[in-house]
Image 1 (tube, rainbow, N blue to C red):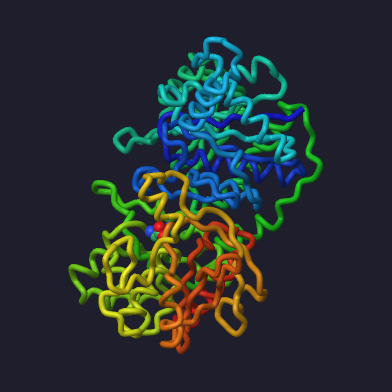
Image 2: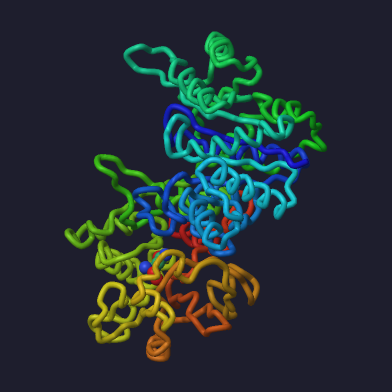
Length: 541
Ligand code: GLN
């Protein structure tokens, strides 16, 4: 029988529930089990694709083209596996399915109700995800924190599963223990309340992962044990650390793997996490700094700066830098600054490399184009991802191919030189307002041209990469752009679409229509990022 581990959050969000889930997956996999992980997002959006990344962080895209939460990216990176569409669900998606089934008369005339039909649909999907992955252990991360209205129905699904399969379902609570400055002591009370909230939902956690700035001491462990009704060995100390990739190693030190398996009466088949431990040592030892600037616009919320919107790009950069023995220093640069103050462009020269990641809409576009022009002329290694490629093509058209005012029709629908434009099917989507889940999404093939930076990276002709965009390089202008020196080094063979562009006589100037960052793994950095970092490290020397 498949085993299920629900991971819930207590006290507050953003304390590393996703990384904890991923790390549990990693350690169970390293002990010889087939594991998969599912993310549940308790909002009405059917998928994450319609949300501004400032609201909810990066939109991650799976091979089969679902726009989902960034945690699925963490699962993929820690499990080192591609996950399918089945491993993601939202409240909106569940309701949409149940309502559609009601319309199809699939409930045989019964009154369709929130309970039990919504949790039933959740359970059906969890079982299906487990079966499809042939998983022995399914991890389920419930978004949000316990005690909110929003995720109550998902906790309810977990409660029912535990009731019907008491030996096959466990609950892990990832909770936070603050150390308020004015008190100078770690406080357990908020965690006690979080457990109470779970108890109200009919659930008792089996394991508590205690997140805090520092390790848990014995008195705290005992207190949590007594007040929260778990044995002291099931209270796992999870202090802040320098890299998230260290979390599985720390969990094993706290014997989390043993605890989980013994509760299921399972035994490790092996225990081999050597590659991972080696990576962590390498990260700790790294000291040759590589500085990369990321030019974006989804950084600010109020007075705070967040980098969550670009998490896969950031991780992919780190993977590549670590692989080369370097120490990443990543700096967020706001594109709009270069519009207001073009003089500040010269700061770009100080970086070993510049990334212009994906984006949407007009805000910040001119600043990004200015920055791309600057790094092109000043030979700073450049990697453009999706919008980054599109704007590199716009810049090239304007300044080298003599097409003044060239643009993407996303920003200037009436431009004389629409070098980036929609495909016909996307025009229909836009005019019919069919905008959710309708971009060019998921994996498509790309044929790589020999003798290019791209080929040097991939070392093979046919590759497959993940997409998320509505606009494309306009083939009507391709010949002119190529005649002027733009190299189209990757093309989608089925539809003859531009996938990679680059420039000659530049240490590294590459743009991709796809998002290579989604496929980078800590133990297996993406080849394009690796090449980009190689050029960046060289510039530094
Ligand atoms: N806005 C562009 C498009 O839709 C680029 C999207 C992206 O960068 N992900 O085509």
